[in-house]
Image 1 (cartoon, helix red, strand yellow):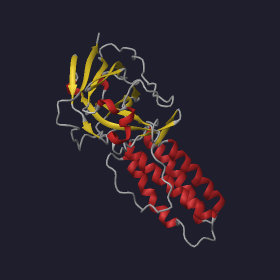
Image 2 (cartoon, one colour):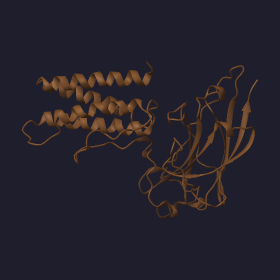
Image 3 (cartoon, helix red, strand yellow):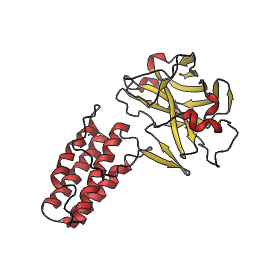
Length: 310
């Protein structure tokens, strides 16, 4: 049993234990079990957690919200309305989504009172939105276009990993991110790129990495000139793996980091030397099913690929 299956099995056991307490009238024990399980689910739905995909993390937050609603209902027995045990039992089938590459509809309609956490994390004192929500970048960030303007002392600092130890008979990859072309390159504050390696189901193959903030602008380009060490030999990548590059930027009005666009590099495109790849509209589609170009103009992500073998 792999780590994900084991985790889901443990959660299901806890869920069954809680609903058992609930049906037997052991309300204090049921509330404790529901609250404990809810907390565990949320721990695996954070941005840093690597075990589940973003869609599966959304399912986790919904299950957690249902558990919290049932616990609240048990703590207010005098209330005439509340999330019932029968409704909660229907939620159990959602655990199957956590082991599937295709996400079925959530088994119950989320009540209006359900507090569903956003899939986000805190870095410093700003929030990072991993769902890629963004409204009118140009209008919101236009006055903050200069790379040299400090964003209230908040700047992403980058999370790049060292090159992995070389294994004989394998090929390691360094990706030098040179620049990205955008027609409105000047308006983005503190732009950086998140690099992730995903299999065909959108599951992380290696840890995600962030570049430091771009070093300069040369209209229409945002320039990075930074090396990223891919954390697994090419020969050990699962079939259908791709390397994703997501351009993100800081939005001072909301104190959030938002995704502007993304690009990806498939395994058969990896060759020594220059590589120029297309940019797609958000939200990032790790399964590469629904892709729309950001612009018809000849603007791309420019990379230089360095292969290291024996």
